[in-house]
Image (cartoon, rainbow, N blue to C red; front, side, top):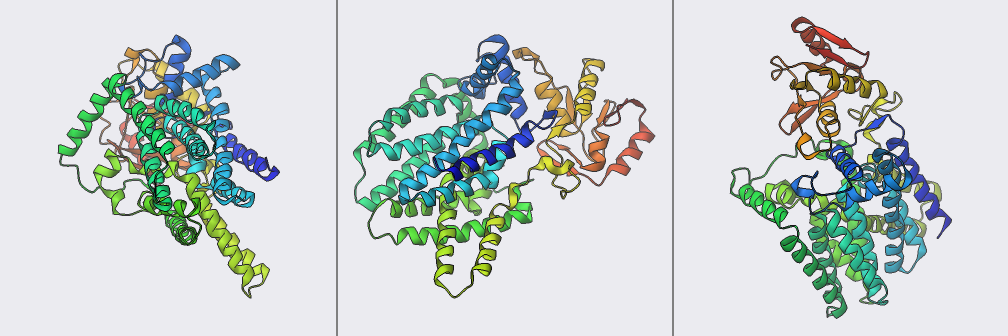
Length: 496
């Protein structure tokens, strides 16, 4: 393995560990706390099915793996997740190198692709947020590489089947999405060669049989639930175009990244399609051309049926190794053009550096919001030791029947993590308040005052959350006039 590749992997690991292991309690995003709770259930009870919601009863492998790591190493579930998951994910950097080397027969392209892949915003984000769909992506990367190698070496085929079983058991949505990508890849290769490889056809058929068999005969409750909810969604009035509330579309840096991505992708696809040998490069170009609507923003991403029903946004992670190869190819073409032109090396290096930094501009983690030297990037994705102690105290001290009002991260901690691991212990301990406290009524209010004042908190109603970082004086004055402060830890306040 090249030294540069080893250094790339270790640098990537360091960037992840500097987030997940640095803070007292890492909250992460979305459903991470639920998955940690489900893993604790497996750790404490030795079984995987009764403590999980319907969506994961038949797909428990992620929680079993995290609990097993905790048991083997004698550490907590949270620490086992924080230590092992980045190592597992970093294997995809090596796989990106191998895939690029397979297509281009050149280690240089492999190193370029692996380096760019490790710096992509999507990759950095998901390695700090390793949940079931990310574990499914790791399996997809292995299957993709082993499947293309199995066409010349049958020894890789059984490993591909084993990894397919792993993906099938670790996440529901990743498997059918991976099948879509595999099918398009096979069709692209078949179009170039004039025929579809029989061995590849058998492999796809095996994947389809595993998928249909497991979903129909084993995960039948989930399948019924999925069909019912999707049919209800299609029949409901919300099956229209929807705004991207809280998405990256609102961030100026996102547009810069997409412009660079689209430009270099088009240059790379044009270069690949010019391959006259009818080899894998032309097939790769056709493949990425077919997948362009999935990774370049377009009206397809705004329809409810594609965005929420088929989760087209989830393809971004699955396609990230191929996107890294495209970006590396585009940069390599640009470097070659600069070498052949009259430009001097220094201006050429400046242009390359600008492109490179534009691609990696989105890698700043939200947790950096607590560092004064960084610009504000939103509420931090972790709790301080003082905040965790205060939230635990509030949960233990307030009457069990009281529902407190809190910001979204505090509510997630109380509802998804502090709740017990038994199936009947799920409780709605906290609700999320709105900016004007219209939902307050007589419920106790828990306020992370220090975070509100310095970095903002996430508030809202339903699923429409908004970050509030400029309303602290009004909020504080309103609470002081209408409520009595019953607890103050310096970072967290409770009003009765």
